[in-house]
Image 1 (cartoon, rainbow, N blue to C red):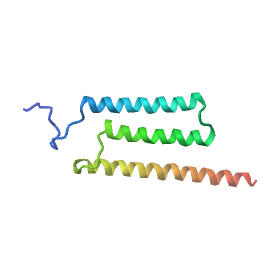
Image 2: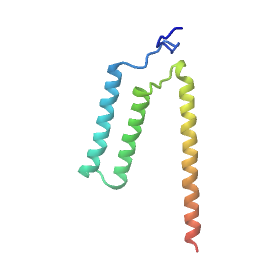
Image 3: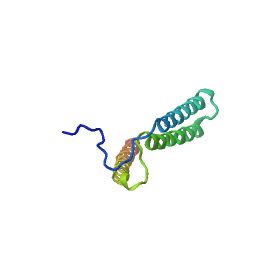
Image 4: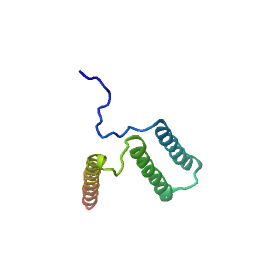
Length: 111
């Protein structure tokens, strides 16, 4: 019985130490930037929320690329498709919930 650890037939690696280090450093920089933004009070209100959401979105992309190794190659097509379906489902569920809760709130305020 062959006990080799080469279970991936596509020949693609999981990433190098440099790739993981780059992802980690970018994640730390993005986290510190968001933390500093809040702690220093540089931006307030809606501007702070937009900036933090932007930093969070960039950090999601960093995690997907450097840690989950998602890219546009043909070997990753099913992973990207599954991820897109997951995002679409989450948007529908979260958006639908917010819509229903808003409508309930508006109708309860009329009484």
